[in-house]
Length: 253
Ligand code: PEP
Image (cartoon, rainbow, N blue to C red):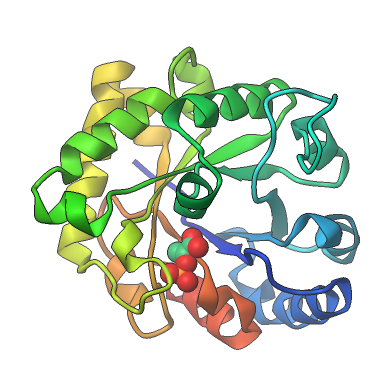
């Protein structure tokens, strides 16, 4: 199955509008040579989405939000809705990131509700899942991932899920400098794909792109991305420097 690699940069709570515009100006020229061979996406903070979207017009870089609420509008102070992200120029939205789960009380159920709204308003979810160090050390990795995949995908049809991106991000590897080995990543990615076969069918499972995330850097990206079920990367820290992010994009097979 030919899945186009997708490399996404999660900027988290970093970059003012001015800094964001300077970063994408550099990035635009650095990644233009991969053309359509690799899909490149950036997820700036909400305040920078619209200007960055404008700056990326006619480029090969797409835009993602870092979260969205399950209602389209209403009394939810501090939240952003899926149609708002769509209007700002987003194609994707990151959902269920471990920082959202850890610091803001996200659960499999709220991730699922947010995903349902995202799809309803024309966004493609980048669904983040992954185990903590404690869970890995007590051999619960596959069970946790299984629960998170099934929880997030409740109520979706196969045709919708086929377009999703799933990001396997072991929590112990995020922002820590510790990366899963490419074999550890491949094992979990293959397991996630098997879950999709069980829930839907082989054809759907073969369409879904599964990114690895967790301290991906220019020097470990090629090894991780060489694995058959690793279809891309979700990059945090290294996406804040144009040269590093571009090097990761170019490492995609
Ligand atoms: C992330 O935030 O999704 C992430 C993987 O961060 P980092 O690359 O910094 O570990």
